[in-house]
Length: 242
Ligand code: SF4
Image (cartoon, rainbow, N blue to C red; front, side):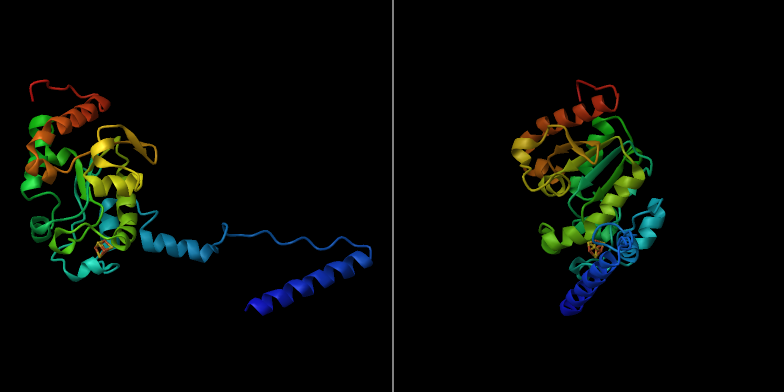
């Protein structure tokens, strides 16, 4: 293939010289129709693979279907897509379903999920259905391990499409994995949580995962401060005695 391209270029150069010798300008090089490095058909395939251009969460969920794009499908009972208000102002993003979520097919329904629900309902004064809750990977990593790089890379486009469709005013990442996925590997949860970041122009507040709060009750105070910052950003009244 490389030899053929070289031969073609050499042939074209010869014709340019012939044109010049005859006193003509060489014919113009046709403009590229597709973007750099990709033909139009290839970009279409990207859209097909990632769900780009899909306009509703229902259609995205249908598009993902019985996904087997990464190895996490092998051990899952349920694909946990996410749930909540499709027009939510606030989206919570965790790392992946645990055992309870895998069984229920819903995000954050175990002990850590019940704590998140208390934060939303008792702390923020909202209903759980008022926000949207989802994860970086939609299938449970075995033994509740962190999702691996290839699994995150394969599943991330679905989270990106969820956020694009919902267009929230604020994203709150729960724990290190979700924050690093959306903000980069340099993010350090203990040092950097509680500081406003941006994901594709959307204000993002990284805080601890509720499962961490169950193991470290002292972390509830900083999380409450992060939640208060979110409430202020959304123009909500902050209850000082929560
Ligand atoms: S984790 Fe994501 S990419 Fe992997 S099988 Fe589940 S839905 Fe598909």
